[in-house]
Amino acid sequence: MKKIVVAGFKGRMGSTAAKMVLDNEDFDLVGVYDPRATETSLAGDATFNNVDVPVFTEREAILSVKPEIWIDFTVPEAAVKNTKFALEHDISPVVGTTGFTDNDVKQLQAIAKKRQVGGLIAPNFGLSAVLMMQFAKQAAKYFPDVEIIEMHHDNKLDAPSGTALKTAEMMQKERGDKPQGNPDKTESLPGARGANYHGMRIHSVRLPGLIAHQQVQFGAVGEGLTIRQDTYDRASFMTGVALACRKVTDHHELFDGLEYLL
Ligand SMILES: NC(=O)C1=CN([C@@H]2O[C@H](COP(=O)(O)OP(=O)(O)OC[C@H]3O[C@@H](n4cnc5c(N)ncnc54)[C@H](O)[C@@H]3O)[C@@H](O)[C@H]2O)C=CC1
Ligand SMILES: O=C(O)C1=N[C@H](C(=O)O)C[C@H](O)C1
Image 1 (cartoon, protein in one colour):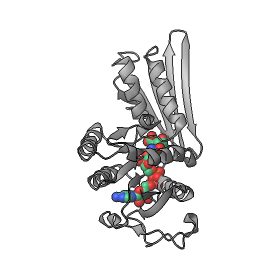
Image 2 (cartoon, rainbow, N blue to C red):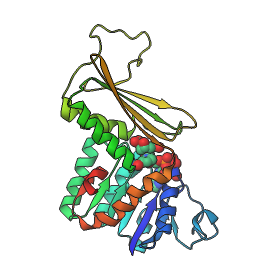
Image 3 (tube, rainbow, N blue to C red):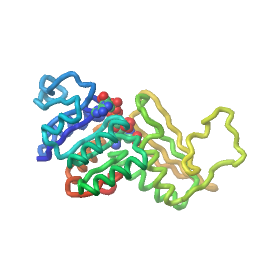
Image 4 (spheres, rainbow, N blue to C red):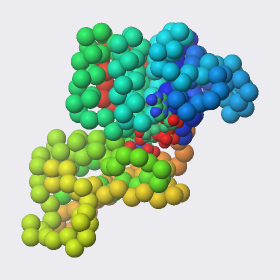
C-alpha cells in the first residue's frame, strides 16, 4: 500500500483528494495537512468516513508518519516550499497546485534529480484537459492565430490558470512568437485585449457557478477552429491524481505535466 499525505485537505481539491485516497484499497492515507485545521484527527468527521487519520498543522510533524507520496493542492507560495520539503525528505510529490514559475520548476527538478526522487507537477489532472492541450498544440502548427479563454469559479486565486499558461507554452513551441491583431490597435479600457503570451492573448473569466473550462479558439482566412474542455466535477481530476500516485515512485525525476506518466 502506498503511504500518502494530502496537503491542503481543508480545501476544495485537497478534500476531494483525501477522499479518493481513502476510497482506494492500494492507498493508505497516513496523514492530512492544512494550517487552518483545528482538529487533530479525521475521526469524528463523517466526510472522511470517521477514519482515525492524524491531522497536521506543522509541516515537520508529517515526517512522523513516514509518507512515500505527498499530494499537494494548496496555494502557490506554500506548494513550492512543500514540494522542496517533500523532495528533500525522499517523499514523491504529486502536485496540482498552480502558479509555479518556470524557475521554481527547474530548481525543484534539480533537487529531484540530485536525490533521485520521482514526482509530478501537473497544472491539470483531467484527462480531457491533457488531450485539449495536446490537440491545441497540434492545431497551432497550422493555425498560428489563436486566443485562449479560460473560465473558472470566482474563488480562484491565480490568473491566468495554470492550464492556460501550459497550453500557451505548448502552442508557442509550434508557432513561435507572433504578434496578433492590428499593430495599430488601441485599448480604451486597459486589459481589454487580455494578457499577452508571445503574441497570443489569454482571457480569464471568473464567475460563480463555473468549475474549470477552457476554449482555445483558432482563426484563419475563411475558417475557424474551437477546442473546448469542460470540468463539471472535481472528481474528474482524481483519475489523474490516482494514476500519478501509482506511477511516480517508479521514476527518479520530477515531471512537469501528467502526459509524461500516461
Ligand atoms: N492540477 C489540477 O488538476 C488542479 C489544480 N487546482 C489547483 O489546486 C490549488 C488548490 O485549489 P482549491 O482546492 O480550489 O483551493 P482552496 O482554497 O479550496 O484550498 C487550498 C487549501 O490550502 C490550504 N493551505 C494554505 N497554505 C497551506 C500550507 N502552507 N500547507 C498546506 N495547506 C495550505 C488552505 O488552508 C486551503 O484549505 C490551486 O492552485 C488550483 O489552481 C485546482 C483544481 C485542479
Ligand atoms: O483553480 C482551479 O479550480 C483549477 N486550477 C487549475 C488551473 O489553474 O489550471 C486546473 C483547473 O483548471 C482547475
